[in-house]
Structures are given as structure tokens and as C-alpha cells.
Image (tube, rainbow, N blue to C red; front, side, top):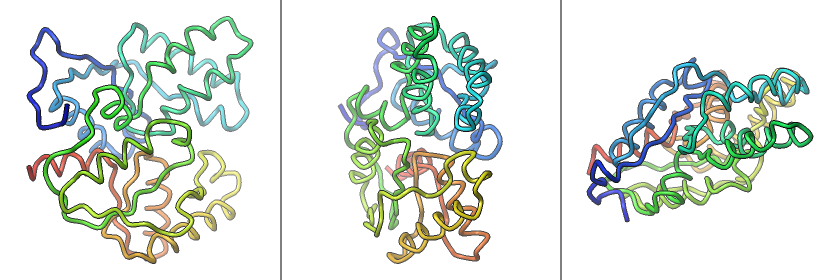
Length: 254
């Protein structure tokens, strides 16, 4: 199956739950909108639970597991059932998949937490590995530096994102030095250790900009915000967009 095929008929229509994430809510509404439009194009009905909150990662990373467990238990209630949970950010998906099971390993809630993790997918991971779509229609004439976030290691996102982007006509994925290195954001790490975080991000920018990309693209909103914000603060030209926006723009040019 590829993205140019007809969507499934209504009786076969898939449904998913969308986890909008805090960053979409506060900063990147366009990424959330693009995610919905892409899924609908693929014949997937998107359900948005209104009472959702955070994935719990800020408290988790700060060591406040009492608070992050409370957030996770709320998420289990909000996203209960058997539908896939789609997240337009790799770090939030990874929190459901890996972080939450870790903090609940000795808790009675573990089975429900693990079930939520198994049903959670970053957007491109879901498109490629659950829907079986490996090519993307349209064109996007740009030279793109794609940032692989630390949280997407060990998940299907990295392969999925590369598969879809590399199939788009006119899109050039550039290689750059220290591609696997952290951007320095690290959630609350950037608040606790701002100088180290900033220097890590600046080093990443140095390598990214060596190849003079037209855009920085990521499947992780937090990394995108960190690198894009640093570039703006330092007066360095590096426009940035979420991968959902690239896929949607390519569709418009198909």
C-alpha cells in the first residue's frame, strides 16, 4: 500500500486517538493540524480526547515520579480502549512506550501502563509500520537536514521518517557531522544545566549548517524548538518545520 491508493471504505475505516502534546498545544498547533490532515487523507478517523494533558515526562525527568505517575494514570483513563494512540512527537511517544513502564515496574498499574505504551506510535512510525505505507506522493523541492532525536532510538520512528522523506520527489536529505549526537535539550535538562544545554545545541547547529540546508526537520517537537530557538537567538538562518508539515506540503504538490 502507498499513500496514493484509495482510502479504505467506511466499514474498514481505521480509528486512532490523537495525543496533541503540550508543545502542540502551546507552540506548534500547525503540526497538530498537519497530523490530523495527513491521517484523514489516509482514510483514518482521528479522535481527540478533550481531557488529555501531558505525557508526564517533565516530572519524570526531574525525578518527581510521584507526580509523573499521577499524570500517567490520568493518561490511561483518557486513552483507554484498544485504539492506537498517535503522537506527533517522538519524545512523548517514547515516554508512553519506555518511561512509564519503567516508573511503574513495581506498581499494580503496570499492565494498563504497558498496554498504553504498546498502542502508542509517533506519526511516521504508525504510517510506515502499522499502515504499511512506504512511499509518499507529491514533491517538496528543498534540501533538508533531518534531526534524529535521542528518544527515537530503539523505536520505529527513525527508519519510518527516513523512508517517507527519501521517497518524496525533489526532496534532498543531507548528511551532516555528529548526526547521532544529542541536541542538548533533554527536557528539564536545559533548565537545570542551561549552559551545557546551549553549548550542545550550538555544536549541533555548527554541523547542521555546514551543509547549508534549506530546512531543519524533526519528528520531535522539543528538539525542533530547542535548535530552532538557538538558531534564532544566535542570528543564524535555519528555518525549521515538523515532519508532518513536510508530508502535508508534499501532498498539496501531488
